[in-house]
Amino acid sequence: MKIVVVKDYAQMSIKGAELIAETVKSNPEAVLGLATGSTPEGLYSELIRMHKEEGLDFSKITTVNLDEYYGLSGDHPQSYRYFMNEKLFNHVNIDKNNTYVPNGGAEDIQEECKNYDKNIEKLGGIDLQLLGIGGNGHIAFNEPEEELNFGTHLTDLTKDTIEANSRFFDSIDEVPKKAVTMGIGSIMKAKKIVLLASGKGKAEAIKELTSGKITTDSPATILQVHHDVTLFVDEDAASLINISK
Ligand code: F6R
Image 1 (cartoon, rainbow, N blue to C red):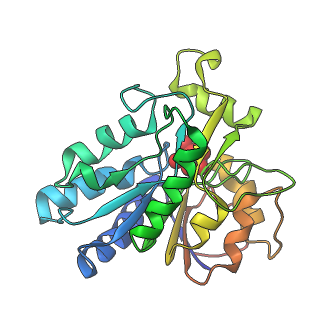
Image 2 (cartoon, helix red, strand yellow):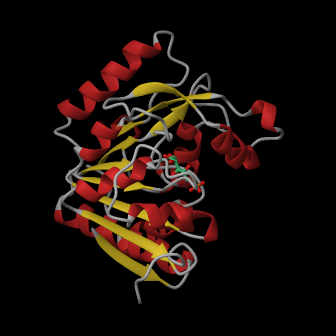
């Protein structure tokens, strides 16, 4: 695992965007695994800038998102489909038919989960997977539990995650209690993984992730066995680990 400590959120966003841009340039038909939340917003802004000012070309790129709230359809302003359209897809030359986000409003959610993994296989797998991390060590919505799921599945969100995500909703009662999420296996099959973390709230999870121990109590720790993971962490997120810049 390559750990790169950067000064702050802005630097983390630039470094992450540079890595994605490299992939897009070297393989214009790459399959990118994408994340939502506050962490990648700056990275997406940087990709938009690269597209507008430097002609970074997304026309043949395919994207696969990690997760979606259960019960929210893609036109709901808090849905992750809506987020992706607003924060990235509407501003670059990507073909939206090549952008996949789980359908949280699907009538048969089990079928939706099965098909989501099948589609990733059909696309030839994920070339580069972008991840954020929960303060509790979750990746996508693989929450701390006794057992972790391999494939895409419907999951309960923990109290911590519901509380953390309530900042995007008018009230905590509006936060969905479940989500459709790619599983640990779907993520670990990605050829390359880049994880971003910023802020003191992520420091404990980053400490676990770099501890040399793997535990389902902090699902991200499994990333330590992947052969190509880069962490871009800012100084606050890295404050509990012993790595100098
Ligand atoms: C979002 C996702 C989540 C977030 C995590 C951190 O698609 O998969 O695992 O990456 O909850 O969220 P932020 O970035 O808002 O701190």
